Amino acid sequence: MRLIFIGPPGAGKGTQLVRVAEYFGVKKISTGDILREQIALKTPLGLSVEETMNRGAYVADDIVLQLVRDRITSEDFKEGFVFDGFPRTLEQADSLWAILDMAGVTIDKVVYINVDDAVIISRMAGRITCSSCGKPYNILSYPPKSEGVCDDCGAELSMREDDKPETVKRRLAIYRELTEPIIDYYEERGLLFEISGVGDADEITRLIIETLNAEE
Ligand code: AMP
Image (cartoon, rainbow, N blue to C red; front, side, top):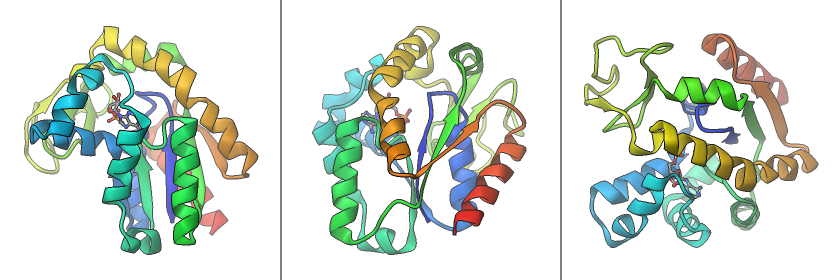
């Protein structure tokens, strides 16, 4: 399975794609995690993107594409993967198409999780993330088993700088302008599966997996 997940920030994309990746036994490739890793390591690249990310703006296409090229292996092409937060622009979608073409593989499906802005803004108010593995939680709808601590790795949970309310509004506007056009891009290629991100999270996972299995 080679999959892409698209959706506005707060659509539940992170939660769903981790479950789907686990189910199909494929690796998650998150450009946000790779960039945050660079910031934590204080590499020149990390230092150069930190301010852009904290503002909720997009990192330049050439930087993101280089990170993806460096990270993806021939094993991933063969075994499958789920992209998280990539591609985010038409330029990235086009370049990914070319990268996969060169490797002789294609995307199987693009899962588009759709949620209204009002729902997103109220959801993001409760979002906390693991500082180590990046797993997302929500104080209201998806709390950790023990307060402030990641269920999976035991690291501390905190609110990401770019999940603060004023930044969320900016991220949404950028998403609508730069990322929404790639929905049509994949629709035209017959790859899009759209699902509402509102409702029971387990039911949404079940529907996504059922649809992906039916496509195989
Ligand atoms: P995420 O963890 O996917 O929400 O990404 C967090 C931040 O990292 C975004 O707000 C951007 O600043 C940056 N970022 C992650 N992936 C990309 C991408 N594909 N293109 C541009 N910027 C990205």
